Length: 194
Ligand SMILES: [Zn+2]
Image (tube, rainbow, N blue to C red; front, side):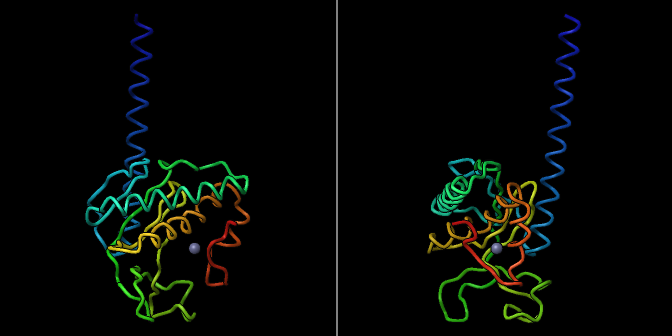
């Protein structure tokens, strides 16, 4: 009886430590997403398939379904390439930020986020210290990326999710290929996995 109690106590203590670590990790990732986008993320929920979604405003059902659909495409092409790690919906956190523009330079519907230019400074993407991006990886581990909120063209959302997810699948399955494709300022785009 005494042994059993001790075991339970240890298990309970471990679960508290695990939960505390996860909370700290989540705070770090949310802080990074807020730094990159300048937004405040106050909403958190899961898609029907279990992907974590953290957002500025509550996303509609179509937006959540598009995220699952993009991840489904990602997992299928990842398996085709022989990768097996991080292929669960619950492995991913998707941040939905406020769009910093609704249209691209040609006038097409293109909700994007403005991010600091960094390695893109002086390139064709540079808008004067920042660039517009459809999405961006926030954290490799845990796997998290940010996209802009969309009111329509949810096919575009699914594509962006698949594309940002490619960087994370490669990070966890093929570090060499990840390094070769992580920085688009040196050329190369999406899809990476065929
Ligand atoms: Zn990319």
